[in-house]
Image 1 (cartoon, rainbow, N blue to C red):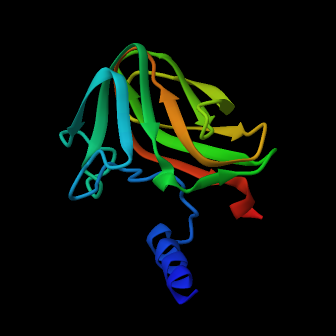
Image 2: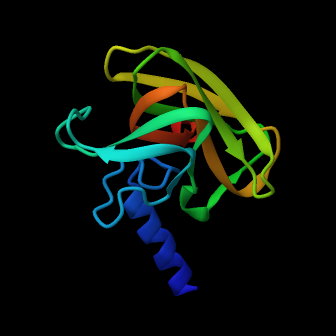
Length: 165
């Protein structure tokens, strides 16, 4: 019991008051910049030449083709309730305009929520969208489908809107 309470307290401290769900949201993990993240069907590199802000110098650049997906494991502890709404935010710097898609995927690989937003080229811009889930599930993850071409991403965030109540 004490061990469980201590683990919960340590997790809360590491997340701060934000209730952040994504693992390594800003690609700054000192041991592994890609901790929590995987890229499928695309080339990627961690860069630090033109960051959003000097305080968080590392960011991810993906060279996206058809079928490229950026996934976050959400620390393996992401549970959702049917109807729950999450706000996704990120700074994105694409080489061309296009669309990004954010999915919440359950433990069986089923898409249980998603949303699309348009991105514009011309430097770092802040983007956000809301994602509502269609059913309750445990151990979910996030999949992000970037637009084609070179796309840089930093300060990605996923937070339940319940945190704002």
